[in-house]
Length: 72
Image 1 (spheres, rainbow, N blue to C red):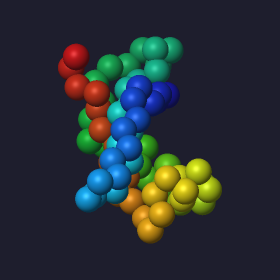
Image 2: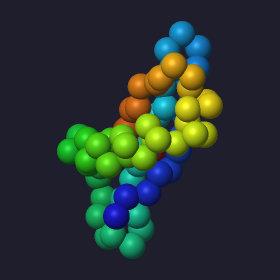
Image 3: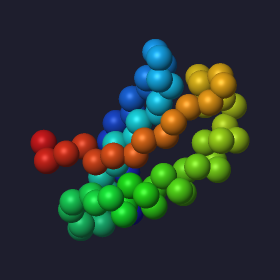
């Protein structure tokens, strides 16, 4: 029931992949919490680790951050 609303790639000193998630419109829910971010992070961990596109974008590893887009 989640959807990705934005992706941010940081590859300067820190290598991070930030995903901003929200509830899909069809879910009827609102307000992303920390438990939602943890669930999405755990669900994406293995698929992203085995993805050649992500490996090419972040040689040597990266940190995954899952967050809410905020109230705006």
